[in-house]
Amino acid sequence: MRAPILLSVPIACLLFCSAALAKPACISPDQALRHLHKNVCVEAHVYRVVDAGDDIRFLDVCSPETSNADCHFFIISSTEDKKSVGSLESLVGQTIQIRGKIHPIQGRADMVFSTKEQLHGGKPKFHPNPQLVQTFSAENNGQGFASRNGVGGQHGVHFHHRGN
Image 1 (spheres, rainbow, N blue to C red):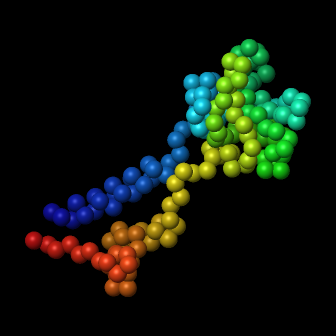
Image 2: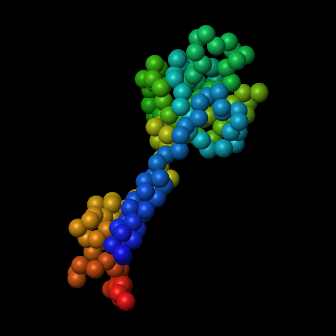
Image 3: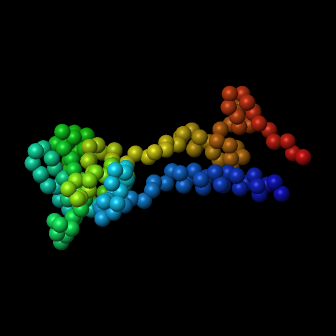
């Protein structure tokens, strides 16, 4: 009777870990005004790069059919950040995922694009230990690591389950 319980623990752990590692869904540019002052991921299609002057450029994520009054979200990048951002023109025609803080500006929302790390949804918030991920297997009874005697433990401390 204990075998199903023992097997369910590693499975539950894997499900929990995979849920924790999954990136939350990105919002659309239309939802940006509802997320002011929050660090979120936005998924948007880049239609063109616009030079706004004063060393500011922005990624236009509103379709050409959208009127200026109906376009409520912009991704802004300073020419000072060109080295860390790369070529904005390479993003034209692509759907991107970008993470950053949403700022209000004159009834619209914007996000500052200052580093390539913001792309693809941004940096993951959790970095799994690669050694733990590699060694987690059925061969070592679902333990993330093995000691010299094959029993999981750390710093010489080993826990053994005593059966009744």
